[in-house]
Amino acid sequence: MMQRRLALTALALALTGLSFVPAVAQEAELQFKQLKPLKPSGDIVAPFFDGWYPNPDGTYTLSFGYMNRNTREIVDIPVGPNNVIEPAEFDGMQPTHFEPVNYGGFDARRERGAFTITIPAELADTDVVWTITHAGETYSVPGRVTSPAYELSYSPMTAGSEPPRMAFAESGPFSVGRAGEFYEETLTTTVGAPVTLSVWAEDNGVREETFPVEVVWWHHQGPGEVVFETESTELESLGEATTTATFSGPGEYVIRARADNFGASDSSFGNQCCWSNLYFRVNVTE
Image (cartoon, rainbow, N blue to C red; front, side):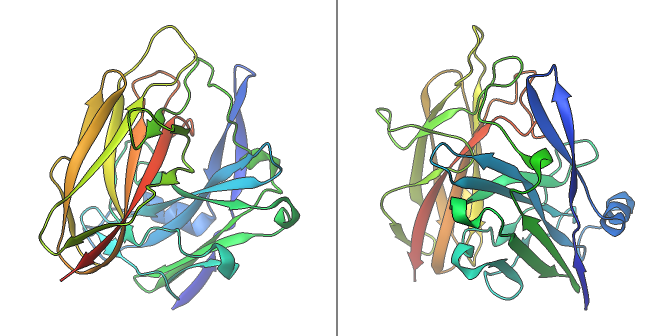
């Protein structure tokens, strides 16, 4: 098994002088793999570091995503030696269920902002390293705040887009951004019995025009298959997105609800904006 470390560098792309979007350059070998013909299965899963946010309280939020290069194979890697974050105190929030995605463009198969880790100010010089081993290959990526080119901003985008507001109830409280909140209770169900999941969301831009928000449901963690009755919902204004999730096996699961306003000209994964996350814990028994 070959051990490789993704040596990540970043380029800062100025958008009319108001914001910067890092464009990640992978080491030569991973770049080569991205150019190779895709396979339905048996290819790599690699972790990615999206960038970091400075927080008003002096902490820092690190954003991570992944790339599953398979066109069909959904890869499951439990938290453990083959899917680990170090230092150990930050381990556990990473996805264990890696679906193939295709958003178009060179980084089409990269899922950004699937989860975040917040570190205290005194650990600003510490690398938070996510390592994934799959298909006989190991990749690691360091999340670090010592690279200014990786700094992301909470400020509005050039045309006024911001991450949508999300909440578990119409009255709030609302959160904004990919860090996301967890529903206050752990939901419970049994194998084969659907559980209902609901979030509220709306566009949050500082502009006259508003855009629809799409809420997409994700199997983030958990050992079995998850089937969503409704995989995505488009909301024209503040509204509720509801689905049911049915689980094929017992275990502890995490479901992610992602809301984006990618219909806006300045909102896309490539722009590192604008979407928000919320999470549900679900305990499934026989």
